[in-house]
Image (cartoon, rainbow, N blue to C red):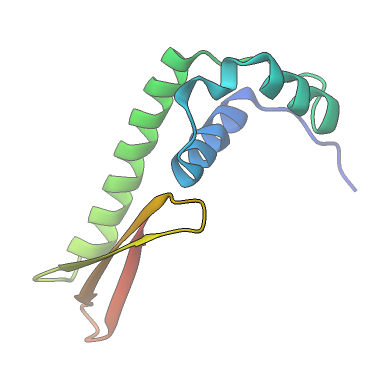
Amino acid sequence: MHNWNYKPDVARSELCCLIARLNLSLAIGETYAWEEYIIRAHNPRFTKVSRHTTTRDLSKLFTERRNMLKNSVLSGASSVTLTSDIWSGNAKEDYISVVAHYVSADWELQKRLLV
């Protein structure tokens, strides 16, 4: 067993991932309800995050993920095909997924879900 250390930058990054995956409001991190939930259920040292900070963090996360995808795909692919699928859920919410398909330098078919 080891001691766990709270890292605010990791918490902010994970909040951005959650917002992107669940299509949440950018202001969720600064609400009293969110702060109370996280402090009571997960981490008493949590501090609120403003929507401005979350916006900057999301932009940074997008740039990092885009660069990772470019580096993994463009290293051996001569072309990339994007496909998408759109559907509605039970709560009348719309969803879209985008998948990149390409052939790697080893001639293996690859696909990456763009999240």
